[in-house]
Length: 601
Image (cartoon, rainbow, N blue to C red):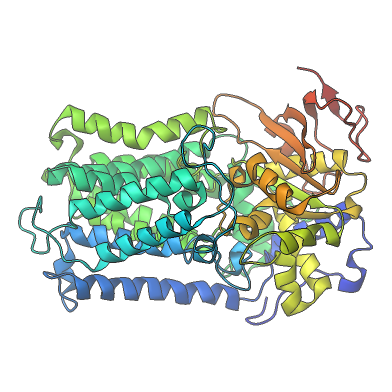
């Protein structure tokens, strides 16, 4: 991989599409092992520059606008809670404008590099209310002047919170800068929640599962100890929720392709060791398992407990160092959703909260002002992870605290030819053209198509990708007749943001797209898989024809998916059909029931 040049798979672009589709997947998955996505390293430098701006500008803005803080005495910021509050607000501005997560080429936004505000300040872009039939004044699927105004008000409030001086109401003893005014924090909480009822995309893009409850408790609690404990419990819940989500079959398969895509790991020999037997067996190796569950699961489950309860400063600092290194590693891998600013903020917050307000000096769980306050904090931060793990169909994996665990709702879209896919450009109001067109403008259509399909090969290296491709093999007459697209990358051009949650492109989104594009039956097929509940051993799927609706439902076992190769040499994985629309018959080459599919309850 060069700094300015991409590392291309070993195929003539002009001959690429003459290959059978699953042969392409094998070649691209094998290439991913050694080179990752294969884009030029200057793509990663874009994020380095952005992170430097985030850090430097954040320090300058907070220091310059907050009386009681000094730009030349950063040590004096230690213990000033307004620093923590304002850096949350600064991070929120990055997130809610679309310049943090889901930005740039690693989120398949090439020109322009962002969606975010370009969609949310524009009337008639798609809008996804969570409960349009139940919550008054939220029905509809397009953005109106009300939504644009509401989004603008959120930005104005955040800027106001960032530049306003602190107030001494409920200020911490011995601090000079005070706190952000509680009414300002509540104004943001109310506005983002109202926005979430109108459009859940903006609510999730603001990473509300991370910050809303923290800001709410800083606004309504009167005890400094209670505020700090709320922030600590929030972080511990986020870490441990992610740790619990790594149980099961999925997460081990996430780590090898993630590390293969890490720009500073240049040893192809090391990358091959992450897989059982390159190039013939690309299932995760024992080394990959160790990185996943010792470096990941164990760290996220154990070190947060130490941080929350330790009264020994040495032990606390060791745990702090461990968690900071954990986030440094995640940031250095440049994961495809690129949640980099969030990871940097967590590095700061880990040291600021747990070293600046240690449990042994009056900031332990037992120091809370009342059991009622502790109960309220616990309910706020535990209810969504518990519900989301039991009923993932009801809760996004973000508030479920299952980030980057491999167990998320996933989907793949298939368009019958270029003309069908181009309808998204012709009939939808959006700021980003289809990714293949963004890439084609820079590299030509043949190269663009290779990298679009490399995204699909990346998905097949995860457990759910093999199930998605299995369903495509059964429901498309020939894979080669379709443009098969990774659902998250299609989604990000439809609504301006994505973070790996196929709930953002479920039937609601598909219906809105169909209303505008008018696909013919068989012209746009989506296969869709729900996350695995923590107490069940199977995943539910559905097949959707955009013109017709859901045509089939069923389930499969993840163990069958992880046992297969990404290119499915033995055909589709086994699955059970539980319902099929009357008159619908799968048309794929593997559609016959003998192709490891059963029909039944």
